[in-house]
Image 1 (tube, rainbow, N blue to C red):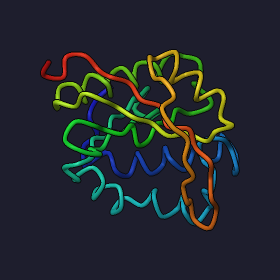
Image 2 (cartoon, one colour):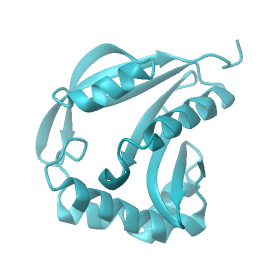
Image 3 (tube, one colour):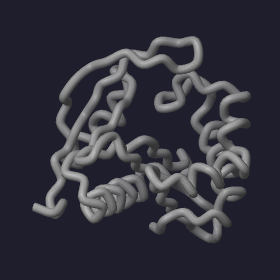
Length: 166
């Protein structure tokens, strides 16, 4: 697990496209994503901008030179960060990569001085909700988010993190 570099942009784009194709259009976690959206967020120029964004930190997991997972955190406020993205290839699901990525993201958030990390996922994505709960998150709210033309009901989970300047 490591922080993404600008030179990872192309490989990260390949990973995002592969992850979406492995999961299948309409898969949980990709609600509202279309081929056009995936194409846009997989562009190297778009990803270079994201990697350079000072409010966003992207971590990648690689195996054999290929990116197989990623997680990102972004500042929501002075004390709160959001786990704004987390994807692991279906082909390596269950191998512990997701658990290592989320632990790395939480340590990074704590190191940056955040005290709370939130995450949003579809209300019906029981697999993700279970994963986040196993990693110490608790449900704190429900909301509706607009994704493209869709309104998606989401659960907001949060975790108070230790070592955040306390």
